[in-house]
Each structure stands twice: as structure tokens, then as C-alpha cells.
Length: 188
Image 1: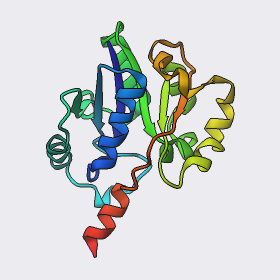
Image 2: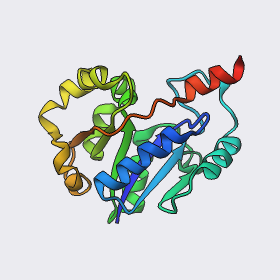
Image 3: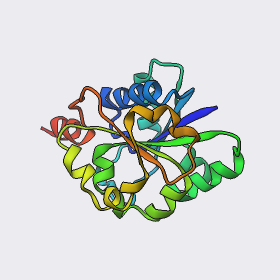
């Protein structure tokens, strides 16, 4: 089984999230993708964060593909740290091939994540391009450190079974939606 893990605040979830999921499902030949709706992102201000239940309901209402599973795994196991959650998953599902899925905006700031170097040693990573983030992502501190571990996107179907560190950058039609922009529009 090949499962993509797509973590985030999903505050609010939108078609851009669905787009990233479809790109990952298709290009990585995944069986499922789990949306990991976080209880809170340590790198973001929580003051405008909708409740976890509200974000879960909105995410479930948005997803139409049965291969996309909306979870609150981090809350269920009591963490807000990706590294802790990944280690928990590897202990509890050792035969599953997991791939971390993120947008290019996240790769641009990945070097600020707690234990990011350990994360890349735990799981292969697929980065889906986002408008305005191609260059910041590909020149980011994390991308520079991982330059020798980058898999050509033409070989992305192999990523799930590769030994980490391994990552690929997936170019696809760009979806301009962002949760930040949607929250700002709602506040106007």
C-alpha cells in the first residue's frame, strides 16, 4: 500500500488542497492520500485558527475522491510535530509505503520545521509546485541540503518505495488558491 501524507492546517480547506492531492495520487501512483488536519501549527499564529472539528467537517465536505481520507491523526496521538507523528506511523504500520506530500510553499520554509533533517531521513517527500514558490522552494536551504537526493519527476512513481532521503518536485498546472488569501477575503 502506498499512502501520501498531506499535513496542514486546512484553515480553510479549498480546491487547491484537492488539486495537490490529485497531482500526488496520479504522479506518485498512490493508493490513498491522508489529509492530516493538524490541531495547531507551531509555526503559525493560532488566533485565527478555526476549531479542529470545523476544519475536519469542511475538509470532508470538500473531498469527493474516496482515495482522500481526512484524519486528525496528530490530535488522536497527542502531537503537533510531524516527526513524532511519522515515527508513530512507522511503528504502527511498518509495511505501508508512506510519502510526505507538501506544496512548494512549505518546502521554501521547511528548514524551520522541528526536526526537518530527521523528517527527510524518515520518509520520501513529494513537493507539488505552487504559484510564486517554484524558485523560493528550489533554492531554499532544505532543497540545497537535499540536492543530491532529488529524484527526477519523470521517475516519481518510484518515490514511495525509495529509501529516504529522497524527494521530487512535481510540476503541474498551478492552482492559485491559498487558505491565507481566503481568510483575508472573509475578513473584508
